[in-house]
Amino acid sequence: MEPETRPVADADVPGHGPGAGNGTGTAEGPCRSVLRSETLLVLALSLGASALSALISFIGSVTKSGALKHQAATLNASQAPGRPWLDLAWQLFGIATALVPVALVAHFLLRERAGGLRAIGFDRRRPGFDLSRGVALAAVIGGSGLLLYLGARAAGVNLTVVPEALPEVWWKIPVLIASAVQNAVLEEVVVVGYLLRRLGQLGWAPMAALAASAVLRGSYHLYQGIGGFFGNMVMGVIFVLLYRRWGRVGPLVAAHALIDIVAFLGYALLAGRVGWLPTA
Image (tube, rainbow, N blue to C red):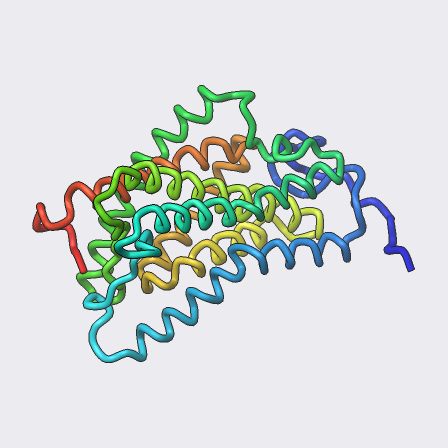
């Protein structure tokens, strides 16, 4: 039997319909049961699976002997120690495959004739707007996030986060930058733009959708500890509110990429050279 084809009601999606900015639907599209299954599959292939993995990792950390701050969570590690070309191949493979869910989201948005990723404001229409607001947001979130991490680790509720542990090879910096951009694109496209749109189309209230997005963001950072969970959840609330105000994920991607680039490269340059930066 063919699925029901009753269209989803028109609603408030950035750039689509009256009251744009709340992310709740389009005039045409598959029925709600299809959208529900689609959303669950996208999350199962991406950050939903990461959230479950982070929970298992966190359980392993808290049940392990020794304080959390004496355990490490490494973000960018070598995949083939002593074999730089093979290591590079694995790094690029990991970055590329992590972006497949973004391509899947673009496909689904094209299918519903929403204009692909343009429907959620991930395009080149307003580069100056995206970059300027992204830089300002990164400065605020990045600085406060570092203070929160240091405080949480000192309190013993966070692991020591090691942003990078790559060998000193020529491709180290480009790979760290590419990894930061990949993180930003995946998270903001899926957890903000796509998820809010789909939850709105499924009839979720704006506050419930905001909470779901923020909790999901915190959950897949739980491997870092309690500080990583709550810090990223707060970041998620701020990002959702700004997305609804701006109607674009572009500034969020820019901000997230800059935060991660500074974290990855800053650690590579400062680890072991300054006393205030924890190392494993």
